[in-house]
Image (cartoon, rainbow over all chains, first blue to last red; front, side, top):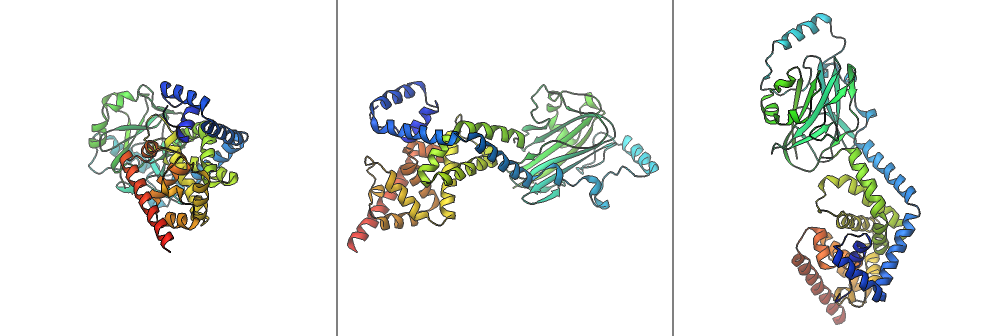
Length: 260
Length: 171
């Protein structure tokens, strides 16, 4: 090694992030160079000082992160649908039976390909609300709303039956990101919802910095299904609101929003 | 797009792996362990917020270094002692082998004038190179710019430093 490595390189050496040959060279250099050996010792000392209280530091960090989360969104500050103004309610549990029956009949005869108007709300025993939290305020996300990076989205689902839920986002390049279940891989199943009623899905989704129009699709099916079996139909789901045949009993809600 | 839970898990793991060396960086910049601890927390909190924009390839270290440097600069700015702290540190930490006149300036006034005249990006480059101890290539990688751009900026800083030095001598 012709000259002394930078302090950052010594840190990389310490963290074993250098290629093996460079790692070997630094090791040889440190054995010979008093100044670099001193720097290395100083790095180790500072690290050691910090790590003596690492548990406390980690706990403080997690508390601070929780505070950030709380400032974004949590279960307690999501306004349940039942507390929204009556004019905002898409579906209310106490609607008269006759009205519910008429609505069900009307929806039964609707074709799977829905009207061009993209809609969030009641679809024959299933309703979904997306609540966004930005800084200190929250709002219900409607179609064509403009959202920003770091807006946190939480999903509130109302179902008349038990079933299975799958939520995914699609960007302008038709790139699919599974949002719920959160760690869904291709062969995962849709998330089971065991009972009818209102469900606030755990955790929230924080929007990234990408720009443009995106979609969130929420699929609710009485029968279980694999995520892969849906992903191949993304374009028709998003653009035409057509539900794949193998889950023809599923209910679909698509939300379109802009990201700035 | 990662969930809050996923991001928390990643940041917790990064904190366990790297907080110690980020502390070393912050101590070097701030020269105060208590403030450095605050800066480390701010670093990982900012990393949590910015995790979706991470684009440094395999290693999180350059990215955390950059966030750490900026967290320290923010603390310095907040305390309105930018000039004093940075000059203290550059004077204290620049080794003799660095031939850059910007760091050779021994007169505190010259240094403070130099730092006051720089924009945030140049301060970031100066601090990363002369205080955090990164070489030009590492600074370039961390900032996502070319090494040539870093060299150009450092050369410009050298010119400004020379100018201040000659102005000071003339006075």
